[in-house]
Image (cartoon, rainbow, N blue to C red; front, side):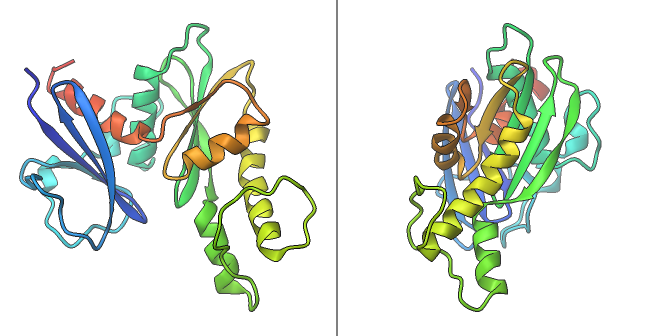
Length: 231
């Protein structure tokens, strides 16, 4: 039987956790200043990082780095979260027509990564994420504030300032996706903290969109099981 394994991805804004037990996975998230969750053995914890490390000790020998991941045309400097998402997409997404996979990770940064059905990285783009854009407006202007509610306005031209901010930022992010996604050639997989919010927005414009919010964590599990010859 596969042993119980705990995983951690240190993000830019939050900590992302996965517990793998008896061929089932449980995912949850905590703030960086929170204590380590119960029943997590830091000596056995498998982890990766794209953000500032938390204030508890992580064993270097348990770290997953980009160079550890076996994908064609993958540079060592590529974000480990993007590489792990690619591993998961290749493994779990049904792709009978061998389309390219377009992964959009909606987090602090919107990272867009494209790979072909054989696992070769084709490149991507990086864009300031949803909250990053909203906070930037507040920090760099006198009168604009982060909206209190995140409800997608239906109209395109708005008078209310909060609605105008939301619509503009949403359009900037969905516009990038729409410019890159060709449903005839690609499968679009959306993941990350804001994935559900943006899946709803994109589904009104495109078909065949897969929402896999924990794709990166699934990639960590798949990678570790593969390295231990458990799959």
